[in-house]
Length: 152
Image (cartoon, rainbow, N blue to C red):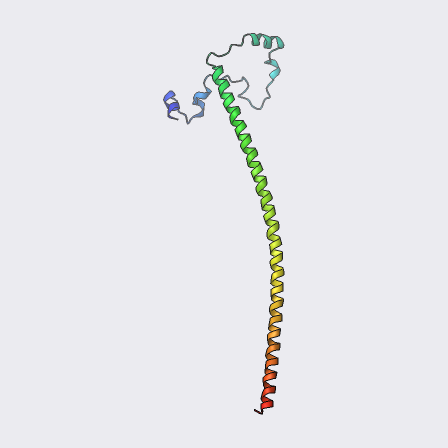
C-alpha cells in the first residue's frame, strides 16, 4: 500500500476519476451514453486486418519464458498435490461415514438388547417379590401352626 502511495504522491486515491489504473486506458466512444446500444460491426476489423495484425505481433521483451514455464510447472505440481490430498480426504471421509453407519447400527442393536434385558429384569424382580410374599405367608402360616401345636 505504501508503494502505491509513493508511486503516485499527487493523486487522491479516494477520488475514482483520478485512479492511476485508469491512466492510459482506451475508452470506447459511446461509453458516456449507456442507454444506446453500441454498434460493434463498424469497428470490427476484417479478416485481412487480423492476418496483418498477426504478423505485426511483437512479444514483449520483459517476458521470461523459462521462468514462466517453471511457474506453470510448480502450479501444475501444486494442483496435482491438492488433487491427491482431496482424493485422500474423500476416501477418509467415506471410511468415517462407513464407520459411523456401523456404529449407529451397533448402538441401535445394543439399545434393543438393553431394552430386552430391562424387561427381563423387571419381570424377574416382580417374580422375586411374589416369591418373597409367598415365602412370608408360608412362614407365617408355619409359625402359627407350630405355636398352636405348642399351645402357646
